[in-house]
Length: 145
Image (cartoon, rainbow, N blue to C red; front, side, top):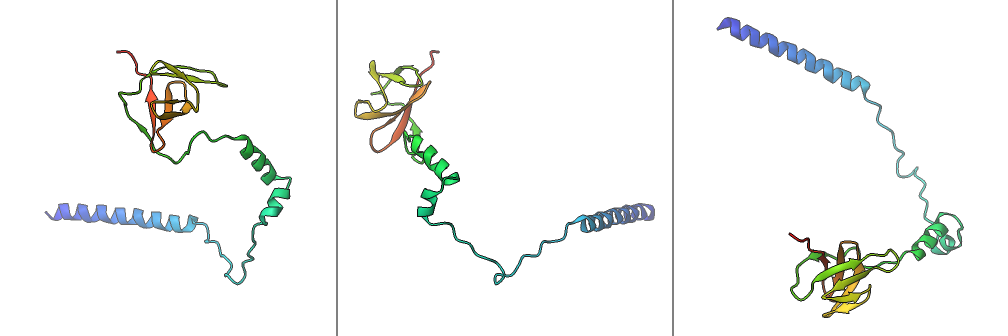
């Protein structure tokens, strides 16, 4: 029994030495903490007024021009639910980057068109996003089994 206890003590001692070595190594290799100035030494700058942003020919002007080119087809924060409606069936999509068309209930529709009180919000290659004014949902092309 004495021999087993001595082995356990020796293993524990070796592990303690390794642990202490790692701690010392870690403390020596740490970079010093940066010293931040006190709040009385910090210079506070305010962004330029909106009028200056509009007259600026730099970054703000470029971003403004890009934003004016973008069109928002639907609210990106609205929830899209995938639900199967028996009144609506997506027969197919005639895909064209410029003018995509969807065939819903055998009726050809473009973005903005409506069927059964639902308005087509967006047409993608394999699905159509519709809105009934309250909810947004999508119809997917059903794969044949």
